[in-house]
Image (cartoon, rainbow, N blue to C red; front, side):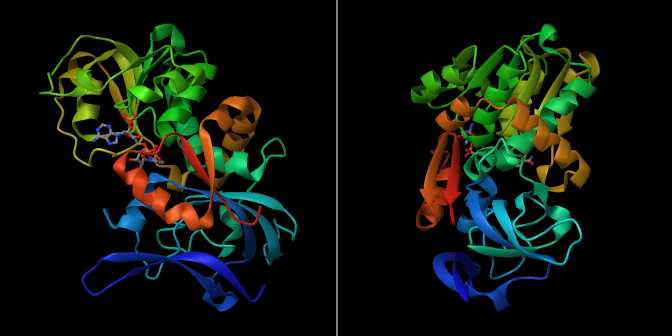
Length: 330
Ligand code: NDP
């Protein structure tokens, strides 16, 4: 293939981001010891930030967005990889500082790759993608803190979105009673089918944050940040743990210290971009083992590369439900 299709982001003199589907050539690819034919990617919130320029996640121009890839190795100078190997790549700055996966071809460091488990198709691997990795990391933090389903229910905010739906599904599979919080009541039936015990609106998380509110949950997975996370922390049971995953409502966090010093709660952040390589192997084995293929399919929509930019604009508006996979060479 002399040239190949890719989405390209460029920034104009005023700092405005423009996105277009174009053709690139092998010489446009970046440094790396492994060349990939991308089979599928996904639309993550970070891709939405990159395409709209809402936050400065892109730190190299021009950029190809797409932080997740399921791909086939087509050439390798890395001792761990051979042509024909099926791999997964998430994070490591791809789509931010290194050309991303909304492209038929990528060249990357072989150290960033994980072997795709046979139980997962490229589309399933991307339905899980960064969302699956993030939730699996969060689950591990809960275990390490000794918080279990016996301690009480878990709350998931931003539940109808990609990471939120993933959290609902995986937490329910792990035996948690899950309260799903969504601003979209029309998504309630889908969240209940994914395993939520109850679905509630956002009202509980509006208004002024009390230092200590009624104790409700043993754990939380928060996709939203800002005042919502502050409310969540104020409602944790003593010893409870909140996993901070996202910033869909904003980067700020104006909370009281009361829950930390009077209830001993913990707030733990997850950064899926820099999860160590060895840990990723474990996570993908875990995800391949536990995932319910029917539920995963029910929370996933597959689109073409031509539709990815529009989907990225919708994700930052909070109107995308579940996960969106971008089929590329598959
Ligand atoms: P989605 O857009 O799919 O989901 C975000 C959800 O948040 C929305 O669907 C909506 O849920 C809710 N939401 C959006 N705006 C608001 C608001 N103003 N107030 C309250 N709720 C709101 O994105 P993703 O699921 O892909 O990502 C979620 C967050 O997690 C993002 O901030 C993303 O950057 C972050 N993230 C972090 C990772 C990490 O490594 N820490 C990895 C991946 C993602 P509903 O309609 O149900 O209310």
